[in-house]
Image (spheres, rainbow, N blue to C red):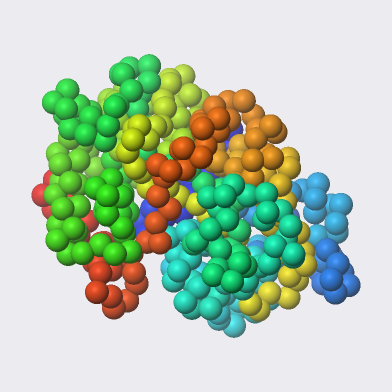
Length: 378
């Protein structure tokens, strides 16, 4: 199974993408400049589709049949390096005509304020009516009922543990038991401050300075149990696969698949009755897109039918449209509790993220600084 990761609010989280980015590169890209051009008539699907997204999110293989059928030329105008790169790219001179880009739910409010997310109506994209109710609301939906972006991939940031080695953790507090001293793995990622906020019951976008101090204290406890602080995602996963650690703190279902590929067994859970931060990436159409019809058709494919199921498989991610469940690979479907999905969604927090710039609450910059201060004491 080809795996690629999701984006977080912070650039350092791109360690997760870097792990298997080369696997996507080996697949090749359909970038036949000038073959189709903008030949489709206005209002028709076809022609060149300019995409600026994460490597792998252009779904080169999964969308091949759809592109061939509709005469669509996929033109990747570059890959996102970090989420903060997107505004300058789509608003700059080289961003004229970009039809699709990607936004993590943590950045939607910020991007909306910048005016780079054009509204998408249900009339334009009827498949929006089929999304889980969780994804029909804020932050993806605007107050007027339109969508600012279309979520198509998601997952939990929970406790990943070696299910063939230890019992299932009953709580986030389980990792602080004496037997797990030096048996916990954690990635060097400032996004953990946000995860700590969610676990402690606080809102990331309204975190106060006293609450930030509690988050720092909590993360100091986590690091106190860690075998090491891994600079790269692959290093942390290797520790789990080799049996040197039992738990990966703030893990996600991709890791389950990677461990299985290595002959082990791992499971990512959100402890019953407790909360966890979740991630979701969405496609959006910039205001200066010049092939909106084809962009809408592309986005519809990502949340519908076999393409949605195949995309979920290659990302080890959840689907946002329940109609795609029956098309999922059984092993992938087992990674998510689809039978009790509404209850599961109640445990997951798709936070607006830390404010950027001046704010009465803890900002993104302050959360990054807080993580650096926590690490000093490791």
